[in-house]
Image (cartoon, rainbow, N blue to C red; front, side):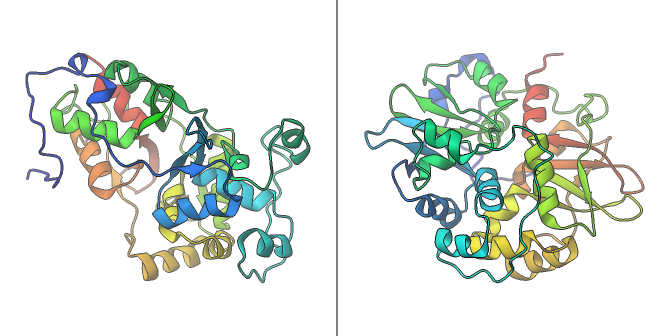
Amino acid sequence: MAHVFPDLDQYTLPTATIDNFKLSDLPKKTVITINADDPIEKGMKTIFSNKILSCPVLSASGDLLGSISIIDIVLFTINVCQSSQELVSAFGLPVTNDNLFVNFDNVPNLLRTDASLQSSGFNLDKASFLTNFSRRNSLHVLPGSSSLVDVAKILQKSHRIAVGDKKLENYVSQSELVKFLYQNKLYHNGSHSVKDLNLGTKKVISMGIKQLVIEGFKQMIVNKISGVGVVDEDGQLVGVVSAHDVRVIGNSADLLEHLYSDYPTYRVYLQNNFQVPSAPITVSESDTLDKVITTLLENKIHRVFIVDNYKKPIGVISFGDVLEKMLLKN
């Protein structure tokens, strides 16, 4: 059965190759941005209200300074705000639990300190303070004339790139590039299996079903990933905690409350309020690269777990992994 995407039929160029395309050939979109001088809570609300995972930060003159991601906001929330009173001040929202904070002291050099930032000229009241707060990835800025091959290689390791010279022209994610390559048939290995391509062989990062959800986000920050699996007492995959969840919740007060619940409570909340799937979306080693791509795009997810016959996770495939195999020539 053919997979149909309503907006994936604009291009059909079966004889073209990726070498024929430049970064400027990718579809343009309206890019939501954050002003570096905006109050920090306004920057957060821009991401929450638009339900996006990342947003470029611009200076008053329109120069690109970097980006703020959902993970930056989560890390800021649990480490900079030290009491419920400060949370009320930061967000203007009620918080009743006085014991909301996970200890990250065993993660050396992970956090920026207020003193080091102030000495560097950062204003802790401004949205610019959140720029790459988690130190996960620096934002690559490329001109529109860049080869799409070179762009794909960068996006194997980085979630997004900014397009432009001195001013921002576009903002491209891994998923958008995969979608473009898929709809234009500008890739290799579509019929090869996950096993044959050696896809998803990195160590699976997971949390236990009884752990607090915030522990999953801690794993994301430490391992520089955007999602972790949730396993039950038998090691079977029963769910996923990801940065996408924060985008779905889209409210800082609800975010704080539910980051500190156990996974079953958290999952029921997501299912009842946001119609998320009741079971994790997975693939098997026998599935093809085409199946992996359509699974990711159709479900609007950024990673998919590989499970064995006992529903135990044996691998995880990200868009970066997919891009690597799409470029791999036979």
